[in-house]
Image (cartoon, rainbow, N blue to C red; front, side, top):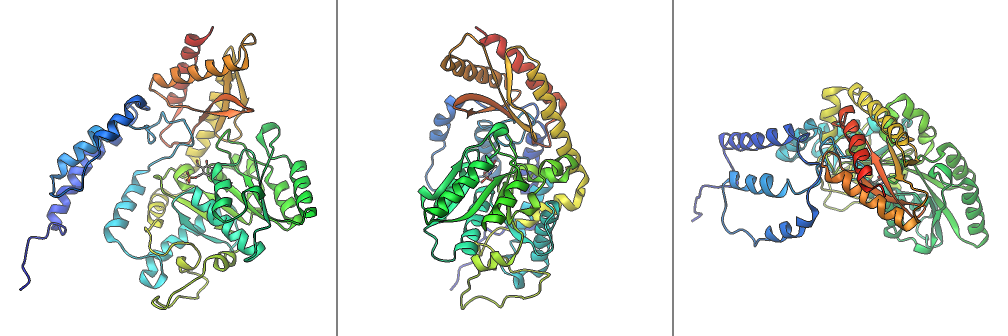
Length: 476
Ligand SMILES: Cc1ncc(COP(=O)(O)O)c(C=O)c1O
């Protein structure tokens, strides 16, 4: 006889409603106070926290309220406030609430979007999203792509697509080129795609941190003469270091002349194509064979949303189309798609909804406006810092990021590095903003990137105020 229990894994509609209310109360308080929360936390306490939270496999259930307490009162406060307005480090993300709703709905309905026949309407919504992204970057109707977990996987998928398209199966002599400013995921993608590390070229960048075209052409010619097979060129549309944008038109031309696949890493900068200024700065982006975008950066979505777009969708099919006897039939219409044939994944989250819902609810105008605001804010902050005594803006904003440092002519380079390190610590200690650093020409450099939809003028002014006050504290 089969025993009957109360099945706790299947709550009643009323129980579901109560759970959502409890969660919503916590969320409203948390998200509503992001601006007042500290920008970061005391990192010396991080290890103690993670050790305190180690626990065995739970044998019994606990009330939702006490679990939320552990999450919201203990774990969340000890983290970078990456969704808050003061997050000006690395590349800020976002966290639009409608995207969270999309995620919640997608996980609750749990429909299958890996193949078209399983949910044609939902797959069409995701295909629409991908086409909108193609439209934003100026791609033609032949283009398509797919949503990924982020820019790293998009760059990896682009490298594999390029490798299949240009080299087929014998690719060990293949050579890929990018600048010394490329995100490290580009190099990692080459290694993961099976290329020889010694065939991954880092071409030096010149003024404005742009890839040196003369050195690139020279390297391609040298490699050809050495019997190697140049096949991939990766350009930057907004580097992580300083927000630098390569001369994309010139790179497209070099790639075309040498028969290279041209991929652009626009993970950070790509969505500035929504603005007129961005379109001017990123001119040539639509000439790329493939483009990485991170909606979890410039479209203000929660982390876990990237995209790879490809100018000719057939290249994706060549790279990723496999099937098994147990699979349902695929559809052949040009208007829709079986995403498992164009991408590495089969079962996966319905990522489309977290983009579809915010874009449909708001339309594109508020996104354009917010991105224009970021360009203005970065410009204003850079000007204010440049006007500050002892501060040099070493990489002015090309988009919404820039790099700067304190300079004192009497100090050695090592002493200056140390001073700048302490300056950054003092700025961040004030907890209104969080900035991060990088090395530029081997020297410790502060950087500031404005990208969150929650960051406005008041927070940038606070950043400048804190930077000036902190500099006074470390001035020799
Ligand atoms: C320019 C650039 N490319 C690629 C990446 C990697 O993207 P993700 O962190 O989404 O994997 C980043 C991340 O910050 C980036 O800024």
